[in-house]
Image (cartoon, one colour):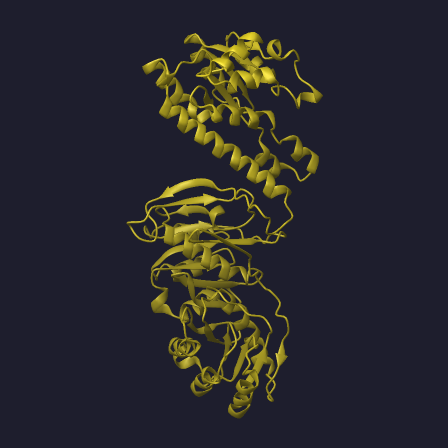
Length: 510
């Protein structure tokens, strides 16, 4: 079963290719109805056009907001060709049957980027176009719906080959039209909405590209972008290197999250398998990079390095001596970029570190649904900063404790880290046991522990984790507190001569 195209309605905002498309339809004997600017463009191309107002009885109403919304238009689209009563109704009212609807919508998303004036945005919400697309798509067994100029070529090719459009093609185009209107409406809903967790949550995602595979070669994957997002690694510009993989994007997102904590400082973070293995800040970018690499140079092999400042030549020279999958930075000096381009397997990504004023939400898929939460924002101030131990921190210890508390925000739970005033010496993250996390951080810190401080992303449920740290040489610990055994843990810290600080804020990252 196929659809013969005898009559079409063409009404588009984006007129790219529409004249050529109309010429091909007209040469095939298709009668064309059109509106306003589209009709003028088609006539300029030498196409005979029937103005839609000859059917509706009006050219347009209320400044063009109403042009196609008319029973005679929609009856000619929605009538089922297999029902005699439908066809008789059309015949009684002298309503023509439409076999093809060609519509694309007002550019609402483009308008969002150009203006924040509400009324200008509202004017770019398409009503008639969405209704036409949905009506035609609903009746796809009889009506071919064309929602994008990208489909013109395929339709013309099929008409030239078969003189008709196959049912398979019409169904495919109908599904595309519904996706198109669904996406369009979800962007509008997301723009107007002020509720963080509405009862019905429309998610607007646009395909950027399919990826070679997912986490493993037997898994399929694709990259989608959120048109309403103002930040994120999807917006990064790739300056050099082969295509990014699914795992690359995950690690880029992790390193982006880590460096955003220090976006107002000169800092570097190195990530491997979603968790940082080194974080440092410095007076220069080179100093920050060397500090981050010193945290775990073995794990850094094949990782991703992120920077908060433009990469200069001295830093690039050091980077080039190590194997990384990707580098993420706000920019690169020309000489640094040329040097790094000599490494053919290195991807170079450029992304301005921008913080949005809007509350950001985080989506995470689970079986059968989605979890949504507000993000744990960079530089989130702890609920308190209470010294619960008898010993108070020295100024140097206080500075180091504040640094490691910020650094631990991006480490996978359970996590314990050891560090100084500007460098994380050792990271123990992603472990079921907090004691094991403490032990791993000690192993990674090696000989830099004596006099260092530590942070834990959540409370210590028992004194054993603190005991392990103190035995290794840690002198001060910051943790959220909140355990029923807080006092017992604090008492043990006092016995060991440790500083203990409670923040009242937890930084779980699962």
